[in-house]
Image (cartoon, rainbow, N blue to C red):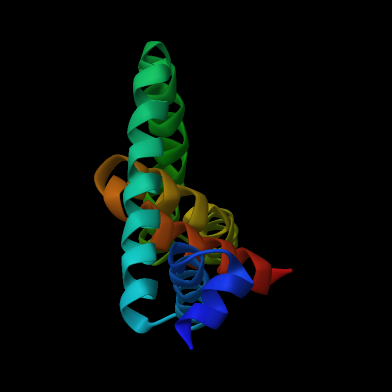
Length: 145
């Protein structure tokens, strides 16, 4: 029987190549959980490496990046501190309505910056987990629209 196939395909190695090609094709049709896990691990590793490479390539901009981050976080924190102080002062003044209204406005402005500030803090303190954090923040921004 093999002689018939060898005459048909030319040689025994041609038959073996055909069998190998078919079996490899069938193997690639099924994407196992182990292969998915390996691919996910590889993707995370590549993403981390890209962040490290980007940080190295833009190392001259570190000072500017930190200054911008500190400015945004400082404004956000200042709004929360002023709003909290205004709420406490409102208890002790003759016309508390103005203080309370001002505090409410500051709290609203600060809450509008929460997601951006959390991304900045995550960038500096949780860089290996930025992918997961960014997905969460972007989905929250999508929900707000």
